[in-house]
Image 1 (tube, rainbow, N blue to C red):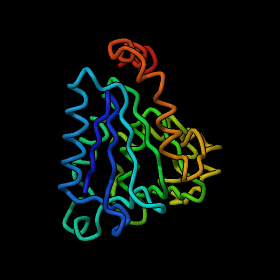
Image 2 (image 1 turned 45 degrees about the horizontal axis):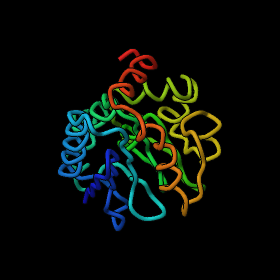
Image 3 (image 1 turned 90 degrees about the horizontal axis):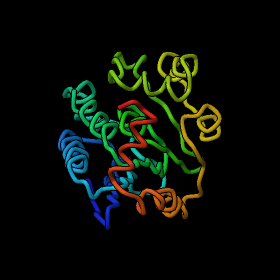
Length: 208
């Protein structure tokens, strides 16, 4: 349910469960964490592209049955987002549709986020009685500021694609038929560069 394509330094990771809105099971989260951690140990990886299968939803977050069994508060979400954030290469979330719940973490951890028109962005932890994963609010604040983060996490508002772009949550709106090509185009310079230099550039930007 997680598809991985490795192509000359570009790793394309696909959440491949479109019949279930690409909702994530414990096994899928473990696979995602393993892929990101492996990429972090491979000096040949210069870009990682994360997307979802289908044309409506990137991911609805935790699988409903798994959430009821405790997955919604599992430390696996933080493990995934930390592994992505720690990658020394360029990371791009190509959001093929709506982003919801715990799936926010992996998108927030990416360097860039592009999304299709009509996508919605929401993280309904307040009404569900959960805390967001520890790193998610901090990363959201760094992109949108504290008030807009409260709009999402405390007021439970669903952002449109246009609002997400205006707030700084995403970087571009891209038509569905060109989404993956645009993501690949964004990775062109990184793919042509040296992995150690990419690590150095990211360190200058993030301090890590």
